[in-house]
Image (cartoon, rainbow, N blue to C red; front, side, top):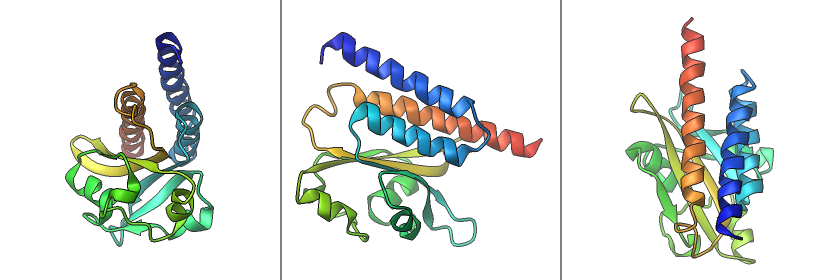
Length: 177
């Protein structure tokens, strides 16, 4: 892919994500479409948005792409637990270039073990911070690739995640009115 094509793909991703988020009041539906967009444009196999449950405080899946609904419904993490829980607790993003070599990577549902038999995965987890408060964690999995940090696709995902954070802020503002 040429540099021009890569730049065009990044811009197309950000445009599509922005249009998806701006075009709906149902944020959970929009998040699933955003994850699908990121998968299509950036070769991601799966994506998940997790929010803390108001009662249990456990992180639960509210939107997903590439996961069976039953599998997504069972996924839960406490703050600080595994990579996703740690990202949520610290507010700092994490990139795991090779999932098979990361002891903190939890695969309670066995979904990734099946994939790892066929190919190595890179795992990216990014917190969503709204007014410096932790609100959610977004995770993506894609086939492992040495250029993941060099080719700008991580920056595009971060920009897309910032758009999701902006949508959270807007939704919270609407709820207060």
